Amino acid sequence: MEWQSADLKSFFAPLVLTPEQYYDDRRNDSALRPIKRLMLAILEDALSCFHKHATAEKGARRLMYREAEQWLCCESRDALFSFGTVCETLGIDPDYLRSGLRQWRAKQSADESEHRVGRRSPVMRSASISSGS
Image (cartoon, rainbow, N blue to C red; front, side, top):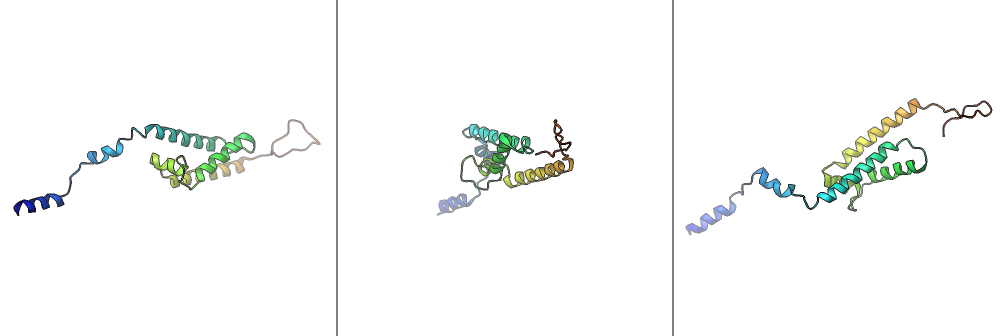
């Protein structure tokens, strides 16, 4: 019976792992590394389009802004390359990033309206100043 109690003690004894042992398996993402690089490139492109074309009023630039905005604001995580899935895979909090983007966009909008001045047409028609549109 002595051997049984020794076996039971070892069965219930805590398994001791160092942090390095625990995280080694989690850090080895060599199989996922190319996918993560692709996800990072997609995220960087969306952020770049959102940033560069935020003030575009029409045309292809405005379309690029809208598409980036829609992707960044989409809550769904069903697709492999959805914003939520990309952020989760890269270790980014999507809600925090969205919040920062909203704050940035609100500041941009405030700055635009503060500095917006009517544009003059290079050709004066009826001696009027046309507002930009």
